[in-house]
Amino acid sequence: FHPACVVNNRTPACVEKAQEDGRMAEFKAAMDLMRRLPPKNIETSLSNTLALQPDLVDDLLSAVDQPLKVMKCPETNKEFILCDYNRDGDSYRSPWTNNYTPPLDDGIVPPDDLRRMELTANEAFNRYRELYYEGGVSSCYAWECEGGFACCVAILKTTAPAFMPLPEGEDPRRQTVSSGGWNAMHVIEGAVHEGSKCKYKLSSTVTLSLASEAKGMASKSDLSGSLSRSMEKDKPFDPRDPASHVANFGELVEEMEGRLRDALYEVYFGKTKQVVTSMRTAEDERKNAQQSLMAEMMRRQKQ
Amino acid sequence: VKDRMAEGSLSAAQKVEVARGFILQAPPGEVDEVVKDVKVLVGTDAGLEAKLPDILREYNENNNSVLKSADGASVVISAAAQVEGNKYKDHAAEKIFVVDHVAGQITGAEPLAVDPATEELRAPTQEALEKYVKGSLAAGSCSVVVAGPNKLSIAVVTTKLNPRNLWNGRWRSSWEVTTAGGSGEITGKVVAEVHYYEEGNVQLNASKEVRAPLSWADPASFAAAVAKTVGAAEAELQGFLDDSYRSMSDTSFKALRRKMPLTQTKFQWNKLTAYSLAQELTSK
Image (cartoon, rainbow over all chains, first blue to last red; front, side, top):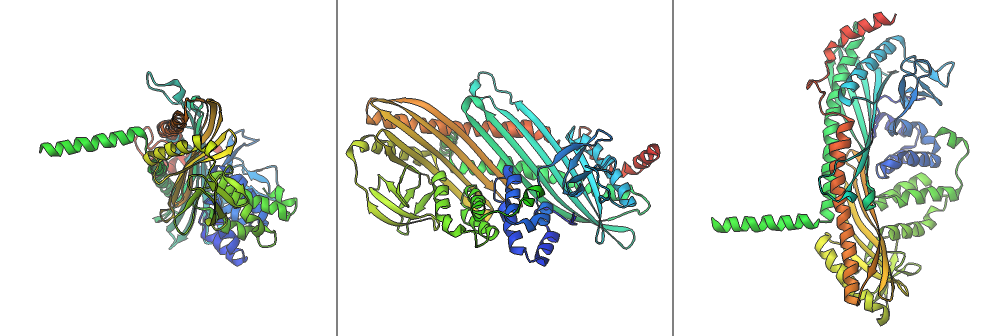
């Protein structure tokens, strides 16, 4: 288990490591491929890539965000998220009990002070999640890192297939059913300097999958993918208060999620739709465009 | 994932199969980049180079790629249009085009004899579809090919490529029409694909399937019936996409994460301290 300190789809630490091991070309090719292949097949694409290049396993598992999975903690019966940051071999560490499932004698756990911070983070983000997500699951995992600490915040929410209300008198074949899933993975790296200041580097990826189907029209649509962003901020922190770091990076995560939500909305429902319209113009739109043009011309003639 | 790797490394044939799987999934306009990546990952000793022409032939046929020549000729690639090897027929141009799938170009041409019997239905159908494509698709192409004694194969396609701005799109539909004395059937599929990859990887994949009876009195009404079915199906997919975008954005997206909490205020991070200490004390 080699935790990388700052990870997203353009990880500087992973790039450095790949360079050291002489696998730069393969790593870059794999990352480029992951950005082009259909996002909904990312697990298969990743496993096939690793079958071709087994040595890339550590680099790719930490640099490529996979769909988040959930497991029930056997002792507390509460759910927690499975990701690369709480994995050791094939076992996963519960943020509730700090124990691995399947059990490990010497599984990696954070040092005491980080474990305290991790508990605070989990509790805070559970409440944050209820406010913004009104459901779903969240988990935070902390680890020691060169120069400071790192912590990830993972949030998972799905919506069951739901019928979209159809206007009165509309052709019932047009009835659509939609469903979706949101995976947020935020990784924070914190480096304390000058005793009471801390530099926080946040790398975030939100993976959003949306599916829609109108059986009556034998039509279906899948809109899936992810966007990544990063930011850095220096903040004063109180070394006596285990909640200080969490309050600081919590604010950054909240701001980042707001930005990513807006960006996702713009790309998913703005940009991709524009590309479709640039390829084919619907009959109505052309008629409307022609009518507006005629109306404008007549208005100008009258002036 | 690690379990699968413990089984040992892949054979050359398996590596080529993985490569084929990747290349066939390349988004519009990005085949060359995917091939480049795959070559690095597969390495040089699996014999991939020799299999590339075949893999790219499959890609071009699946996606109705439009290949061009230096002097402006173009041909729509489809399995039905294949004469043999790398040769594809274009009835309207009265040519058989020789292509290089790897280079993505026409490399030569031979004459194609026109069969008046099949042209009777084929020619007006192509004309009617070209009119439809001109009116509805941006820089679209279409071709109607004789696929058998009573069968026509139709491809309609356009791509909008903008790799500089990190997006690409493709709209296509492919059809088969069986004709047997005045009545027949048309089956087909309409597909819309978009890839956006600035600071991420977002892809739209939408499709619609059609199976409908067809009847006509003469070649002109046949052509009109086919063009009408194709146009209606494409318009329906576009209408479905409008509905779908609206339902995804108004229903699913909003149900995943609110823009702001119900309280209309952000999370009170500065209030964490007191809560956390209390929690620590009560858990002891």
